[in-house]
Image 1: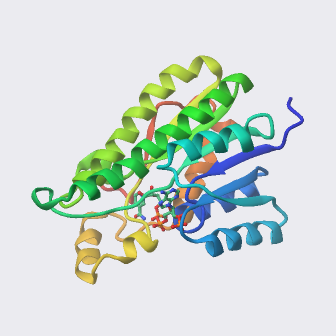
Image 2: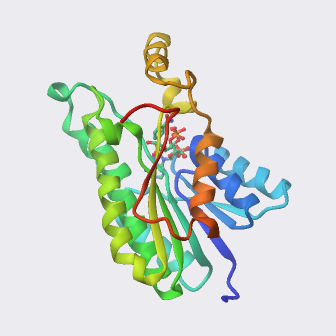
Length: 247
Ligand code: NAP
């Protein structure tokens, strides 16, 4: 057993699904580090809520797509300072558009943050977890990464890519007692889905057998389970949390 604090790192923990994951993992007993890029106030509020509930948390500004910054963050703030027991690769953005009109910048930005950023965090976390001989990695993919979605070629490519990384990383890291799984949320009420029109939401509801959008806690509870001892024999899996949509 290490004397270092048992820690969970949640990328993009300043709001939405990341916020719910951070709060749930704090309740589960981990010290939590939440990263953010644009909303320090959101990240600080999440940490304050966690501390008020008796947990421990701190916020770090870290752009997942900035490779050098990610590598130095792990080197300077994680390695030898904490026991990195859980990584939740949650940071993500959308830049939607039909593919024949999709701008190169929108393709690059979404891939850089959602896929390359997650890969860099996973690689750096894995280096530390391999030495610890334990760890849990959960990548937040999406139902559209399994099924495709018109107008989201960039986002879908990134989210499918995350499923691929999950499977390869699970095979490579299993001998070191590290599990790697993906959660594929359906449509969850957050800032990301707040951009959708009423008509789009109605169309979506018709495709969801449970006839409602999911909540951030639906995802956080699944992440918490995958991070727990009870999920020790689950790796390389994609857990769909989508109200029963058929994939
Ligand atoms: P959200 O409310 O838009 O929050 C996005 C989070 O990512 C924020 O904390 C944001 O930080 C952070 N972020 C954005 N760019 C970043 C970067 N370059 N580096 C580090 N952090 C960055 O999104 P959400 O709906 O909670 O989604 C969270 C994850 O679930 C995403 O990966 C998303 O693709 C996935 N997902 C969501 C849904 C859904 O229906 N909502 C469905 C399937 C999958 P700031 O607050 O500082 O900007």
